Amino acid sequence: MGIFKAYDIRGVVPHELDEAGAFAIGYGFARFLQEETHTPEPLIVIGRDMRMSGEGLTRAMIGGANTAGARVVDAGLCTTPMLYAAVAFTPQASGGACVTASHNGPEYNGFKLCRAGAVPVSRDTGLLRIEDLSHQAPSFAPNSKVSSEAFPPRPGERAPVPPPDSRCSAALWDAYWRRMRLFKRTWPDKVKLAIDPANGMGCLYVPLLKALGAEIVSINDTLDGTFPAHEANPIKAENLEPCQHLVHKNRATLGVAFDGDADRVAFVNERGSGVPCDLLTAALARAMLARNKGAAVLYDLRSSRAVDEIIREAGGKPVRERVGHSFMKATMRAKDCVFGGELSGHYYYRDAFYADSALMTVIEVLNAMGESGKPLSELTANVRRYHQSGEVNFEVADKDRVIKRLREHYRDGAMDELDGLTVNYPSWWFNVRPSNTEPLLRLNVEATTAEELSCHLSELRALLEK
Image 1 (cartoon, rainbow, N blue to C red):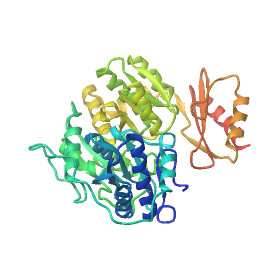
Image 2 (image 1 turned 180 degrees about the vertical axis):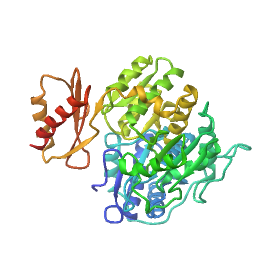
Image 3 (image 1 turned 135 degrees about the vertical axis):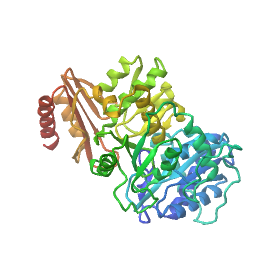
Image 4 (image 1 turned 120 degrees about the vertical axis):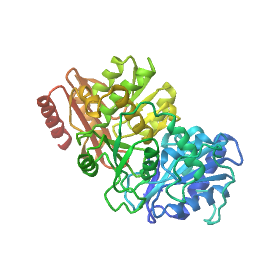
């Protein structure tokens, strides 16, 4: 189909993905779960984000799953972490799907799939089989039905605020609130959060954070699948600027910006500066290890050397992994990591079913600030130990040939090929890895001094552009 990617399914609507395609994918996913679980009627939890095409694609996907024999629970409008939680909250669930295209523009939509317990399905663990099975789907029939099984709220424990949209499942809202409030411990006095959800699903987190006791100032906080304000990708510097201005204007404790499906989050400190995700991983690792002595902590291989160093200094076991949420989650489980962070703004928790949780990250950052008595700028001050290039992209036709050239040029360095090529020297290192979806090589360089970084970055740029 061309829309089956490394970690999810994603395409332009309706040119690459339409309701007939969603029906076929629902059918293929149900058949896949039948094979995996040996269950003729697997239960699938399906939720969606606020995109204009979401309701029709969801209805079609449910119809395809029903046609294959599956039962479906409709989780309604929800964030991707809420969908993972809904699957984990439902012991009989065989898997789940969130209808979303994450941070992509409004013309896109797609599906993030998981097994029971919120275990992700990627290209290596089932997406290719689902693609094959989807080709066996019968003709598209739009009829669908939803199971009566859901996430029953406990009497007297309803969330202190109602769901902000009638299309949200009130039962899931209550269950998710009960779960998240358990992780609040000690926050700073008079927390004021400046939040920019970019009109994406992070809008759902605004009332929950307010109910947890934060004062909220927010922009772009109504659900709108056209993303009228800006792209819902806070890792890009230009998309973080509105949140930085909001922090300055309101003298906020912290700035928070979510991506489209609210599984990723970026932070702005009280001075209005964006916080690099790997440095936040190191700061949170230190706080998590204070409560989980000797635990393993996961980080992606693009991260600063400081992350590994700080995990060791805090008595933890650093675990390095290739880029991509499905790889990170698999290693989280295999190594029983208490926490993990990725340069893209995904943060993973053992207590969040080994999955990513943007809301839990906001809670844990405030916990770390409250317990240390330090603002975020001070928490991350001694984490910035090296000079980094950030990710630099190069358009390359023959990616394998260029990586081979680099391997030969830097053969005196310590190499590994966990993800692309990483070469380590005592005072600097680099990683270059191929994009899964574009003719690009992505380069990250780090060095002890700014001068050394500039020198090696120029040298690598010449080799990559040759």
